[in-house]
Image (tube, rainbow, N blue to C red; front, side):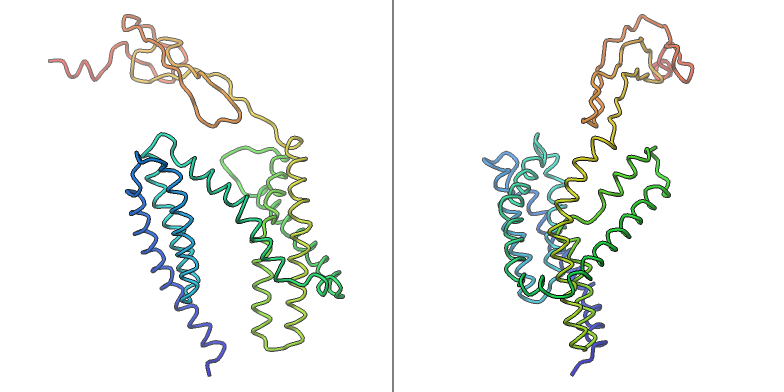
Length: 306
């Protein structure tokens, strides 16, 4: 009969092996998906979405069936990353079609199914009728306050390259509060695992019950309240920063004022669009706003002449 420490050592020793196996399978599958299907094939984006869903599900559930719970998700993640690197450059649309397809699959099928399965495994009547409901509410409130304080400390104390206003830092602190089901389940699941390892039935049942109540309260209140806070406080705390039109000077070449201008400035678009105008080679006038004195002729052209 193995002890608790032997089981823990066995689990820790097999984690690197599963990560390595998942990485090898993911890299191999990702390189195969780079060439199949071909970029010029009919319905190539639809085929890629189906392949990602089918192969990813096969890797995940197949690995769980043989007891390798880490190798499956690792293989799916690395396979998608390796394949997407080539998909972004082999066609004009990039990976936008695949991203929209996976988003629709999650919103219409996977997300409702996840909450249906989660609700079917819990007995809401027995959990909410217990005396631990108030303790779960206080525990959840304390956790949210600690998370908010940590976010405020990180956003206000950490120095970044960008200058942010206090209102923007406050919005970032509110945005990192846990609102998804995965973030809400991780911490209570660790508590349940610890309670099972203690061997005390009374403590175990009470701890698991408190964890389940915390999860239910978080799912019922954190997600909608967090979404409403972000939608209401976003227009109040955030301000658009318009980039004024600026002149770009090509150093080392003859330059005519107005030859290179920013043609588009949109706060919702992070791309810099430049409009190239004609440059008159006979015009030797140097732009007065250049940082360095420019020569009227190209130095490379003069050196190449005999």
